[in-house]
Length: 175
Image (cartoon, rainbow, N blue to C red):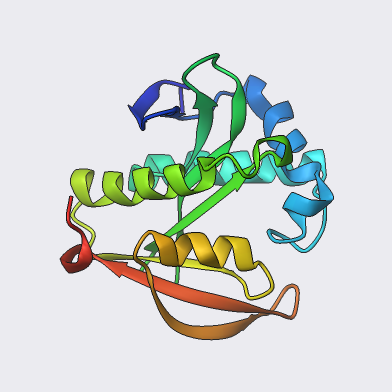
């Protein structure tokens, strides 16, 4: 990945990552409030490096990843949003994480809409998943607000916490 801007929303720029941005990933995921809904805990620099490596592999293989988010107005890093994969079919899985200092400003919703629309505009995927820990009611609210429909719950094996799954299809998209 080369860190190039790929697309924009009203207030955000979505780009790939460069190796020198590891500290941004660590700063985002090291926050206990952010990390508890990702891995169930704050993450280490080693976790951040693993994430960046995974995102690079996803981008090379699938053409998407969890993109870097910067604010258009000042170029400040605010989080990440994009897609991982879920299941044996490698179905796109929509996800986002925003620095706690940027919560309640509408960035997560804006990013979720932008990546949803990007997926259906730029790829031939028929649907995507979105899921969150069932206790993460703000994230579930965002998934529902962008039109995703509840499908089921599962227990996450690594954390033993319940995940709430939502699905969005190309037929639902009005882009």
